[in-house]
Length: 231
Image: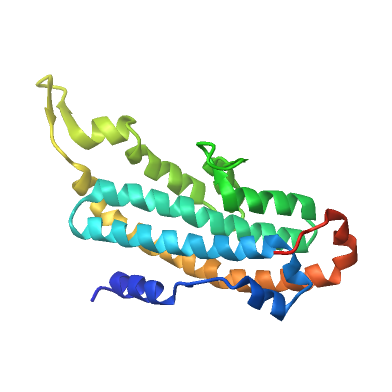
């Protein structure tokens, strides 16, 4: 079995199946009277479920030499992963007081419940804005995303370069699907890259979350002004 297949199977087996709010409150009633802790947990795990699902489909398409579809899904995996990277940054920033608790609450609920079609009352943040925030932790991620977008969109690369060739001397343009030749060799490296980032960010979130719990307890009186309802 290929190492990527093994990793994906391992991810699937370790995916969180549920978040029990009552167990959280029993563990730390002061910290978990805030809905934001539950929202953070659910966001982390839904990112994991979606990322693993997309990654698996991208890998299947790559193996079947469907490079464009695999590449588009890799782009979507980066969008999904950016939510976890940004959540880690927000959690780190609120504990260090780089951002206010009010901003933290607002940004987490936006990540947790944002939509573009009005399904919720939270307008989803532009993914480019999220990726710009991720640059601090993973320099170049925005550029990689932009590079992948050129083939995902009907731009010059996604149209002209991918499906046509012109001989200037003969004044002749021929058409064919060149996407596998263009992208197959680099696709596996891209998948391995995002897998590495995912494993790193998913693991380090636990430490940030525990610091957030401690911070919420230590600053309980100060934070009461926000009148957080119980979960």
